[in-house]
Image (cartoon, rainbow, N blue to C red):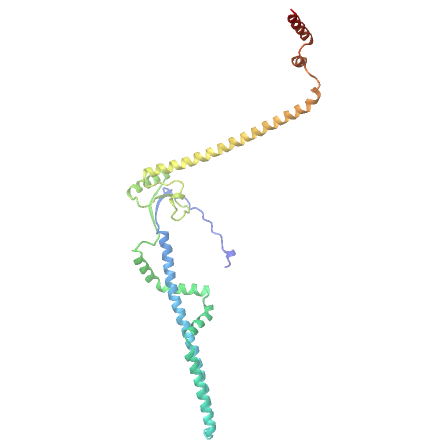
Length: 307
């Protein structure tokens, strides 16, 4: 069946069960780093086996190739002897010399070949290292060696657990009862987190406590701290939204005021030329004074000087 023909499976909730609304769960989770170490250990052991197995197979292929050359040389010599005319001594001598020379040539070629030739042969046949081949070989090898590998790895890691576990701590008719039970279990068994979840719903496997909206922790101070932290987060978001609205309003008001001021300045500039020639009388008097008062002041000053 093609991938596009696979039916879509919906993760739908189950029907409610009377008296079973919420469940308390605890998870046993191996150290994630330890699980990665286990995978690396298994694969490194396989590579050791696969490299040795491949070299053995390549060596067998190389040796068989040399053996075929010897067989061919011996077959040629046997054929030459069988077809030899024993009545002609010169022909016998010539065939003998030719056969000996052929065998010496093969023997010399084999003697000159070394481990370097073997390595070159292995590299030439590296096409056998296909991903599919390695995957198939790993699956066959792992099936046969699984128990031994598990034992060896556990001994190296001082028998730390590498298996996932799940424990149902109780099923309750209400969320409040389940939370109360979770809190009591924390005090009795402080080494494991207790999660409260609805019955019949699909849940994440072994969720991280920080990803759960409402969690009960083993320590009361930690409970209070986490609740206060969430409250502060909510207040911070509310304050941020209020500040954003206030700044937007201030910016709008400032823009309106600037626009009104600019319009007033424009109107005043348009009216200025029509009023420029009209100068108030008080302004003229304050600058030049009154001519009659000036004449009388100078006459009095002159009389005072003559007397």
